[in-house]
Structures are given as structure tokens and as C-alpha cells.
Length: 256
Image 1 (cartoon, rainbow, N blue to C red):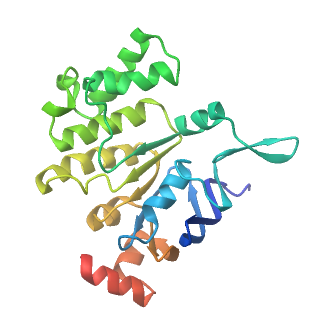
Image 2 (cartoon, one colour):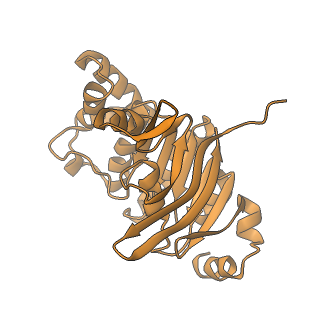
């Protein structure tokens, strides 16, 4: 029987900002259809790792692969070469990312925010992009607000537009960088509900989060990061209930 290959492969990834080494040789695999939650204190490198996976930051050492595609590189003649801008754009299309602060275009409606990437990146016609965007907005419960501008939407609604925008690109992998941390507490639930539905449909997800209940209920595995390293990784309930590392135990007593 052929052993299942990971969808995401992260090997010895190092990232420095000046003299500060933010990621210190990260090794992680994520299987297709798996939800991996990254937890840990602020400054531990979680968000930087996500940005490297999406090639918003370039790793200084190691490599990242999503399916057969390298982040920021392509194979030609059996050798790795730096990817072109077009190849990087194609890679990012397959790796959707949802940010902490929504990153919506304030001068565009919800429908336009979702459809613009479909026209510019996926090269859909305006009518096809609009139809696809409407489906994506309906999927996150916002069909009735397609003509609303971000300023007229709550934080939770804006984040759901951002999720719809990423999903409309039909990615292989979804990255969520603390998607609820900028929201008022009463709005967190609506975003987590959408994320649960995305996970239930089999989307491969890497989620940076402080929502331990979400991690426990939705994640297949949890990785605890501290000071640029993965301290431990394991099945969600096992790691959250009976962590093996004293550092993980100390962290969890402060956040749960």
C-alpha cells in the first residue's frame, strides 16, 4: 500500500529579520484534509511561518512545498530556480490566506472584493467572476450583504468576506492568521462557525489561533511554538489535555 504523502512539507525553515532569528529550523508536515492549529505566545514565530508558507516572506534557509509546488521556487532541469512573479502569483492562488485585519478594499463592495481576484488572477470574465463571488458569499452567509461596503459591515462580517474571497480562488490550502483576534468577543463565534464548515468539507488548513476550544474541537493536530521552534506537536486533544513539554503546560495554564 502506498504511503500517503503530505500536502504541505516544511523542512528546516529559517527566517531572520536582521540579526534576529525568528524561525529556527521548522519541520512540519500537514496531510491533505488535515487541520493543524499553531499555538504559542506572541512572538513565537507562528505568523511568520504562515507568511513563509504563502511566500509573503522569503525563508532564509530550508524549503516549503504545497503539493508539488515550492514556495518561491520552481524546478527546471532538475534544479531549483527562483520563481517568476507570475509563478509566485500562481502559487499564491493555490494557497489562500485570511489575515487578522481583513485586508478588504474599502472602496469596493463585498461582492467586488470577492470577484476582483477572480478576474485578475483566475482570469474569469466579469459575469463568471460575479456568479462565483455570489456563491462564495452565500457560502459564508452574506448573500444579503453583497452590495455593502466594508464600513457598513461588522468585523465578523468583514472577516467572512475575507474568507469567501480566499475560498473563491479554489485553493488547495487555507491559512488563517489569528482570524478572530481583532474581533469583539460576540463576533468571534460567527467566524469560527464558518471555519468549522470549511474544515468539515475537507479543506486542508493551518490556523494560528488563541481559541483553544476551536483547536480542541476542530484541529486534527496542534503544534506548540515558542521562540522560533516547534516545541511539540500531536493530536489536538492529547496535546491540549496532557502536553509532554513543561513549556507547553505552562503556556496552557495561562490561556485556558
